[in-house]
Amino acid sequence: MSVIHTLIMPLTGVLSFALAAGMGKLVIPWLHKLKFGQTILEEGPSWHQKKSGTPTMGGVLFIGSFAVALLVAVVLLAVAPGESYFFGTPYESARFWGGIGLAVGCGLIGFADDFIKVVKKRNLGLTPIQKLLLQLLVSGGYGVLLYIYGNGRLNIPFFGEFEWGVWFIPFCMFVVVAMSNATNLTDGVDGLCGTTGFVAALALLLLGGLESQLHQGLIASALAGGLAGFLVWNLHPARVFMGDTGSLFIGGALTALAFGIEQPFLLVPVGILYIAENLSVILQVGYFKLTHGKRLFKMSPLHHHFEMCGWSENKIVFVFSAVTLVGCVLAVLLWALTGK
Image (cartoon, rainbow, N blue to C red; front, side):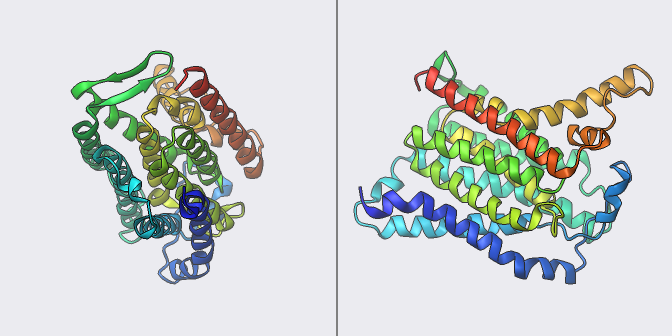
């Protein structure tokens, strides 16, 4: 094993971190100059109105660092002696390049949504139908790609590996849409989506290592490093928001990593916080309709409920990240117990 092979994953993460943190000094003033400021919805906590005008679309920081760090890693592996393994089987390449494509595709959907909100001055951005159709298009393409090269092969904890056949494609589409929308909902408190995404990326980096998946380890390392660099600018009080550009990208990237190691069911413990955020909205809406106006939570998504209970943004980020960490530990233990 060469020195490059040994160091490539940590180097990818460090480079991604440095680029995201460094680019903030240039990109944030540029977003200010272009007046790409966030308009705060009236439905949120009233004190969030003071954040109005904070630059959004900051997800370009970690998406850019993610892409550049991976490009550097691929070039280094291409020129390193004896590293042709990296470009191994078509299925490995499909999971690597397809995963990157899925993450970037989700990010582009978010970018379009942010662009409409900020530049076109339509605060709700893409309509729900438009966003869903675009998500189905991107996730469908990813699902078909993996199905063609991998026959829809997935691991189910305690049951082993199965080929799902053509049913793999709609399952993949469902997970991508659910996860990306869940991370999108989580982006409502300074540093929350970035911090939980960072923890989840580290867990998937570890799982990728346990699975001896260099390809997926590189994606996870670039994602974790980029998010850490972005948090330099996004922790409370945030100097930039990631916007839908970033939150949808995170959901797509985490989903791609889980499918990349053929363990999408481990997204349940890894993404337990995102599931809770999603469920809080579903339950709130359903309870409101059933009771003709009563609310189950003080406000949804879940992080706003705790804000209304008096929790500070920093406390919410700490507790929610701790919950994510516990879920990630459970995912690793589940992986070990299933013998995979």
